[in-house]
Amino acid sequence: MSRCTACAVRIEGTWETCPLCGASTVGAGTPSPFPSVPLPYSWARLLRMLLLVSLGVIAVSLTAQLLLGRGAELFGAARSVWLGICTMWLVVLAAVRARRRVARSTLWTVALVCALSAYWDYLTGWHRWSLSYAIPIVAASAIIALLIIVRAMRLEPGEHVLSSALMVLLGLVPLVLLMLGQVPVRLPSGICGAIAVASLVRLAWVRGADLRHELARRLHL
Image (cartoon, rainbow, N blue to C red; front, side, top):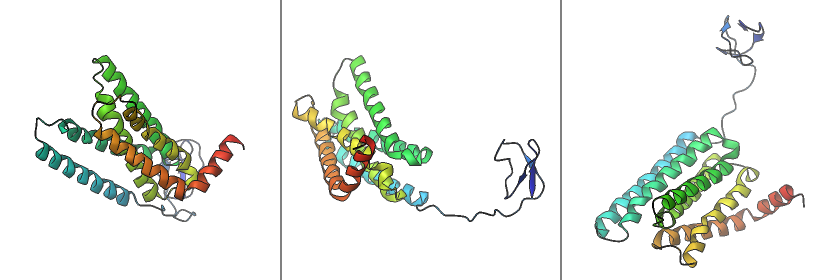
């Protein structure tokens, strides 16, 4: 059994540093008395799924750019999908750091990115590229990434259902702006709205009872 050089406690297991103070240990380690419990999900499987989705999106983007040509109006939208890919990987990194709060972290990350994009657009003359491209692409990519993470990590409904519902509602904002006539380029907002509506219907159909339970618990109803 190893021993901590700082606090002089005996440690079971193969710790190289003390779990209490972080100091180095001396002596031979012993097998841990606790069983090794595997994770209910595989990070390799999650990253493989996300990589396949990213490659598919890249292929569609390159194909669209070849077909549309440089002078087409939708060329900017085809290039902007790279922002969506970055968003999906950003959501996965947030999941790595905060598994229990992955949906909440995703919501705050997307809200911050959208707010910064709108502010940047405002500072550069308000050409509304944030409304046409940045906000809908970021929101749609985050919804897709969150669906993949929830499925791959097998999260319990209580860990994600409420934040997922708020994320989907955030994805409806580009659709509302589109209906109000505030979006110069309509395709990205239309796609984001379709993804958000489909996700909202799926969430209400599959997790409706869990969502009502979480609302009642949080609001003390």
